Length: 344
Ligand code: XIL
Image (tube, rainbow, N blue to C red; front, side):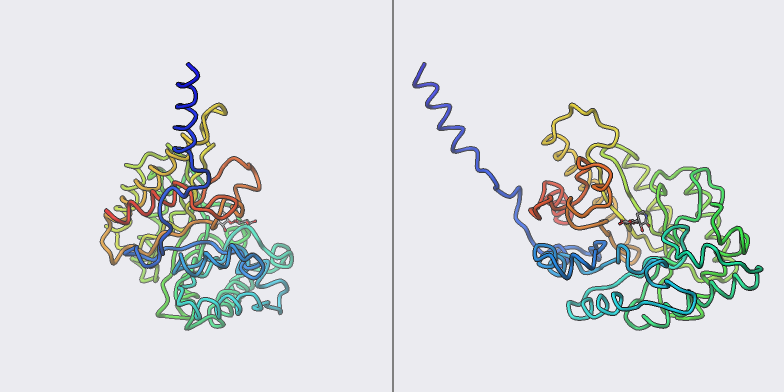
């Protein structure tokens, strides 16, 4: 009995290697046949060694998580603050990384002066035009793709009542894309939103709207499906169908803010290791689906952060654990699932 116990103990000791990575850490950016991106936090890029050691090695596309939102970039009517953006543009040039502009028009992260601006429709249009064109002009040549309008639709497919809709009317979306293309006729312009991956009512409304813009000659090049998803929702067939649908309509496809919460919709008793294994399968399926698109339509897969430590979901729940790296910047099974999809 004692011998048996000793044997079991030895077996356990040899089979259990704490800290062993679940697969080899490679350079994702070299392996993938599409740009691999991350939302980047510029403070961390400057200050956290773990963070800046990973970013330029793994990613060849970055989306600024905060610093290009209107509240940061355009704090007063006649004042723009491009300090952080300029640094990030230099960083991207140095490491040959694509920088994707996020986001010109949104209902959140607005500076107070903009939210409280009093003016008629013409004055609001002028404000929007000046905002969009000043930013695009400043970044021209370095930033070649933009989320022009972000989250303009409600889940039921109606237009969100934001300051733009209230002050300009439905035409604000069309105008935003028009002003953007006047400022840079060669950049790629995106509409970006969440829940599009459900391929439901909201997706239907968005695609109909964007097709309408294209028919009028407005330049809309692609759609960002944010993909803040759970382990089992939306189902993979809906995600794939939404992406294919975009391709059929001639839109570039960006999985623009991918994270997979391991706790959303799961029992609180579910074992973390099981959930991480499911998360690995989930990213593998999502990525394999994306790779079924023609290469010319794969704008990229961008993760909304680098590690579980810096995800916006972590601010709400420490247990979401939605990204490729764990809180101490070690690769997770999810990283390996992504690599496996790239290898197939
Ligand atoms: C989030 C950032 O991750 C947070 O750090 C910030 O406080 C709020 O915005 N959809 C978007 C992103 O388009 O810009 C949002 O980013 C997440 C939801």
